[in-house]
Image (cartoon, rainbow, N blue to C red; front, side, top):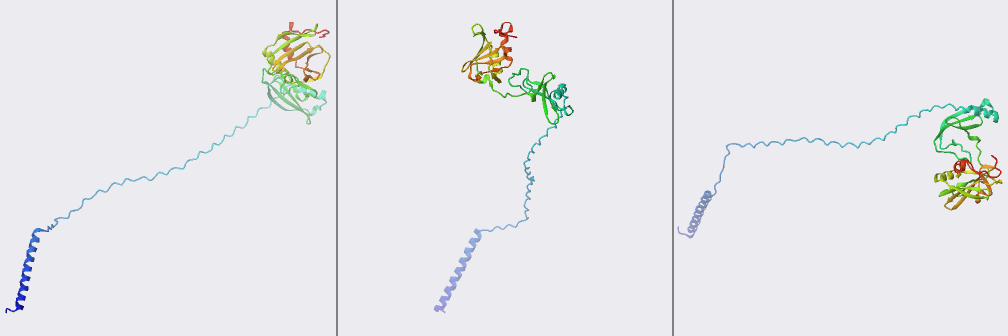
Length: 304
């Protein structure tokens, strides 16, 4: 059966056999080269336990305290003042009451002391200076008392020194009502560099030098003159002394003392307005030691 069909079938079969052989050959070669290792575990390995970290407790945050406000200090109230016992009135109050009754006609049955108190003052005026008077202040303060008398309608105030030996009737001091002058201010005596004491020669009528006064005496003289003094009409008298002050504006002369008035002062300056003044008695205390025997010269017709 050598027909063409038979030959074709045979050829196809041969090719198929060859393909199968080749396939098996290739399969065997791959199996020898790549071996797959399969390991059956003999025991299950347990994982090691990992220690848990120790948890350190975190303290809760401390709350920040609110700032404490400092309380305002409460002022300590001052203790109540201790009441000072009222001193008894000085003994002079009795004589002053009698004086009001007999000299001023005050009804005695209504008179009484309505207040008494201790006091201090800067000079000997005891707080009630009389115009034109110079008061010492060297021993300040000056202690004493104030008391007031009343008849229920009027009052009278009195100042006394500590031992009640000086009584000042304050309500009876009268102010100046007429012309007056402050010599220290009017003559510009503040700032003076010196003062010369002069004395009148009655044979010639001229003033002659005695001595320059000390700086302390100069200062005291100016203090004495530094107050209002009353002015009055000029009297016909010759002054005995003259005080020549060397002031910043020139020479200023103050004449002092005459037969008729031991405290008279005058001068040629315009502020005298043709009048004379009455100066404090302390001027004589300063001038006296410069005089022979402590007495001023006697002018003609002098009568003690």
